[in-house]
Image (cartoon, rainbow, N blue to C red):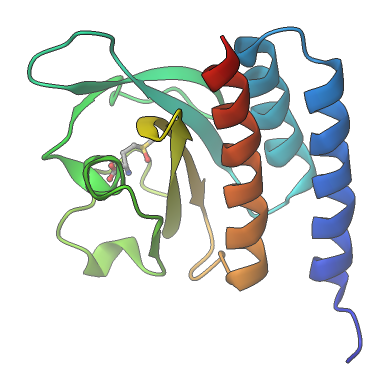
Length: 162
Ligand code: SME
C-alpha cells in the first residue's frame, strides 16, 4: 500500500516527539514541546492543549496547562462538562468529526469543526488529557489518533516518574 503524505508526515512528527521526550527535563517541558510541535507541523491541528486534573480538587476539575493557539475561556472544566470531561471521566479517546452535531461540545472558537481528546494515564490513573481542535471537519483519522495517543503516552510515562 502506498504511504500517504499524511502518514509520512505523521511518522516524521512521531520521531520528533520521541526526540523531544529524550531532551525534555520535565513533564512540563515535554508538554510545552509537544503542543508546539503538533500545532506547527500538523497543519489541521489549529489548537493544541493539555488539561490536567487538579490535585485534590473535589469535585475533580481539569485545568488548562500548556497550549498553542487562541486563548480560550475554558480554563477549568468539570468532568461532567464538554468533550474534555467525557474523555477524562471515561478514560477513552473521544473523536468528534463535526462538533456542531455533538451536544456535549463546549465551544472554544467559532472556527472549530472537529476535535480529538486523548486521556493521559500516569501510574494507571487519568492524570489529564491532550485536546486538539481543528478548523476542518473530520480532521482526525485513525493515524492521527495513533499519533496523539502516542504523545499522550509519552507525557503519562514522564508524569508517572515524577
Ligand atoms: N471543546 C472542549 C473545550 C475545550 S476547548 O476545545 C479548548 C470541550 O468540549 O470539552
